[in-house]
Length: 243
Image (cartoon, rainbow, N blue to C red):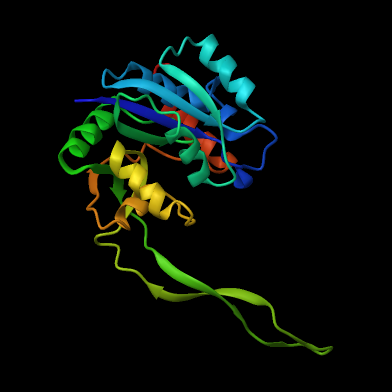
């Protein structure tokens, strides 16, 4: 089997994080968020090298993290693009010739587990594409913005509100996470054909090829750091992770 290369994405704008410190460099128990996933991937025997995608704002700091914590499998740090797909494309262009499988992961998900990576790689070798996720636990409603008229003594007002359009049946709904693992030729083909589309994960592009994508059950601990409140939850989860 040709080796697995990991792409770790740390080039997002992080608009919802609302901090001057990029979320990949935010601290969880005094260690940067990105370190957790780099540590797990670097210790996994099937992952032969790691490419980190970072924007200009944090590239130097990421390099310092890699050196300070001796993450030897990080082969290269490349510049991110304007969109997620652009960042992935930049990394795909510098893959090693011996790479047969590509693992794509968001640096903002620090708590990936080695067993999950193993299960994903095993499943991907059978089907060509495997992603991780968990069943949705909450009630999910599709909503829309609406204006309603309010009469006041001075004038009519039409404030906007959010109203329920429909409630989705949560049976069969899964929250998809990263990592996601793909056969190299498959993810290259997906990006060549559909890379211009705006999508929220890489599996969507593979799905558009008509290729079945397998889902491996993951962990609810594999949270994504999106808002400052997520760091509070992450502090508790991090106590079970050694880096």
